[in-house]
Image (cartoon, rainbow, N blue to C red; front, side, top):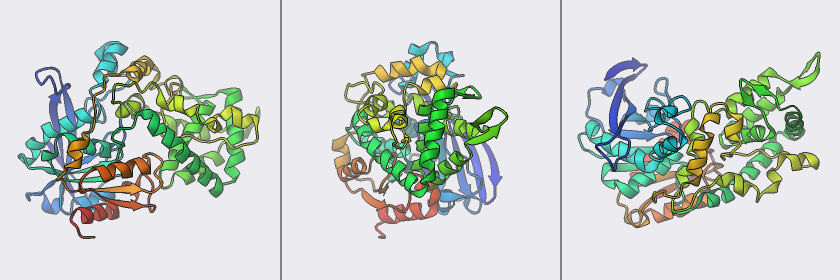
Length: 431
């Protein structure tokens, strides 16, 4: 273990080995990384543990600089473990560079089938006794981390003291098709709100889309297509995302000796906002996190999008309607335009066709839950359907919700200490 300091904090890096397949404990093992953080003034004390599970899938735990955001509130009473979920961060990363070590696409897909919430929770349970001496811990799950927390409640509640969920209550039984049928109308509302705030962006988005359709430029190997441009709508799910999108669009064009062209500033901003190089599993496993019930996900977002023709950019340009941005959805073309994903296209196809996904949640066990649980549900969350979340909240015995329109999906980052305070007060029956 390696310990070091940031202002007001002591950090200790931990590395654990766990089975790749927990059903085969004697088989291949992988490494899991976690960063322990404790307040300097309490470093020698016996404190309860809080495990943080990041959103995603595919993102390593946030790298904090000092006691910022919710972490500053947490270290007042907890010893915190920031876990890089398997395949992310420093936990045996899975990407275009490392996955060929597994073999071809079939071997890669079989390997990645072990990287869903069920395996992540079993990793947590393998790690917990080594840190807590067997005591249960509090779990804070953001977005997909909340999905993992509900799996935890379904499969290993004995490991849990308390569960706090922010923007991450999944449907217990929805197919990916149901998820996206609910998602596209939400995304359309977010786009309408953005255009109401920045009406000048309606024409600017049409101009950019038309330019991309005609010229198909590339930026650092990324193919800048109309569909890729539309995917910038993922920004609209965050508290400042509408402003970020507007600032990106206003820098779109420059005059050059060859005429008007897309600016380097815009092309680099679009590339950075749409690249999966730092989190490829978000794309590769995105629909797999909903896989259960013996049905393939089969590129659900792409198929369901056809039911919402208003999202067709060519149709918008042919008429006088606005170009609609999309949001948290993954499509086959992602694996053509992004150089970080192109080598993984066949692997993604095999995962999309897979039908042997096991059920993720146990409704009977959740209905008998005894673990204190509180969840922040964001009123018009672009990423997680509010109606789905509230149905799940009602299905988990004792779960207390805080439904708020004060924050978007990134509320635990934007409102950190207040969000954590509110959830702790709910589970402790202080409000």
